[in-house]
Image (tube, rainbow, N blue to C red):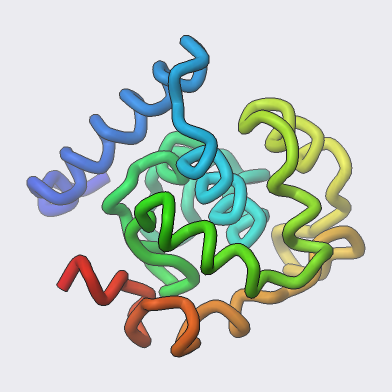
Length: 152
């Protein structure tokens, strides 16, 4: 990590991610936040397996729980409010929706154990590459950068 990486944005995301991690373990994290964190982890499965983002080096899974964090590769943006998320998740393919059932830790643990994705090749036999279906979609309520239009 470089000194220039220590910004207000990164510090807040770090704190919020670990705060939500604690809320998860206390069983007080709302379901729609858990589901969005799982969705982020599915989209960034190679980073999940590595234990940190390949680009920004933020630790996983805490970065998936930071509500205002935007993915360094524009796969996902800030978390949506419950109502927005409920509408958005209906647009997800069934194989992606199947990961949203269950608790955050359980799903991530199973996902890390079950996936056969190679970090070097990026080829997966478990999780389809569906990230392009979520970015640039008018139905998502997000801009091309994956940022919620309401957040702008």
